[in-house]
Image (cartoon, rainbow, N blue to C red; front, side):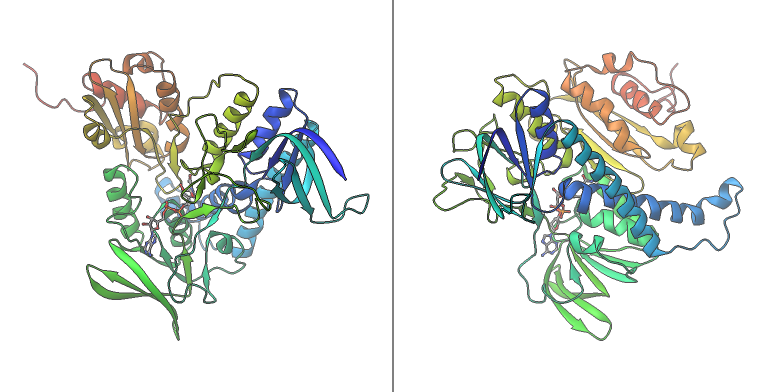
Length: 476
Ligand code: NAD
């Protein structure tokens, strides 16, 4: 049995489903093949469930640390972990249902099963359940194919990694009981977000990170501040510490690592391996398919074309930023290229966000990166303790930093660690995407009291002194 489409998208995560909708809106006859569940990692095992758990755990923590400070009595506040899991699942389900509706509403054909790209350019689908005509395997003829199968967690190849109680992010979301203690391998984005959730809920958390600092790819001041905040929360952090093996003991699981060339151990009931993700390409290619690779990733040109004509690839299976919003943006651009249209999205300014407390967000380059690239810059910084809204909500920890070109004053980057940083970073993303200067970004009036006023102050600091910062030196 063969069905014919202009475009077959394999993978319905934030890359694939967004591309499918855009393609359908542009007039293409589109099919989507998904083997697990529409929404991909982001909705089912990543961004959305993680942020739901962060929200619940932060609220719980705030009840304890904040209530009294604002005159509220919140006595005997407890939690039911199974209800937190239920709430997380409900949020995911609602969004997945919404996407299923959007696919249907846009006339996109959905095939639930594993898709394989064949040598003749068609896509074979091994259906999860036989279709109305009793077929278990069907073939889709495709004018174009978009590969968007995302990534899966990487397991580090060490003894004990397959022990019961060692999980990846997928396993954490499937837990039905609250783990009382845990060792997290990896102080990257996933590691610090899970540390936030479980430390807020009272678990004993240890992070073991091989690199010199947690969130190594972020601005140095941000990782140093987060380390301090985590320590205050009682999280034990070991950096420059490479995990060598895991063993089962009477106390739970013992993680053996090497710190400053000395052996050391950390014990927990659970071990979370948060040591990166790898492209999900197992079974994606049929017999005789030869596709150019770039290491473990599928190689693409700047139009997202692979080495096979009419086959495109986006998201976590290609080299670059492994983020949901990046995958969606790549998907939109790939569809534009399929339709011989120049994309409007600027892929050079993809923001990165970490949902810790306070939140972290950055876009463009840091001052250190500007120095490395020999770019002369001006910088501005505002400490949020002088921001009214932050004082009201007791979220005055944190700062906003701006980096701009010295001669043109064009905004080149921003780093934020403060309340609502993940929402506010969009101001800077818009500025960078549109080549805006510090002065142009300052032209708009920000309402009072808002966290966004901190952005205006950091921008002002770039070109003079910010209003709500004491002058650096007394003027005559
Ligand atoms: P990551 O690459 O951000 O961090 C993994 C960390 O594990 C690294 O710092 C690495 O040095 C460390 N590590 C590796 N082997 C180790 C060992 N043997 N011992 C100790 N440490 C070791 O990867 P991640 O945190 O797993 O996240 C995967 C991807 O998912 C990332 O690209 C991330 O950006 C994305 N993600 C994004 C968000 C978000 O946007 N908020 C949330 C979750 C995940």
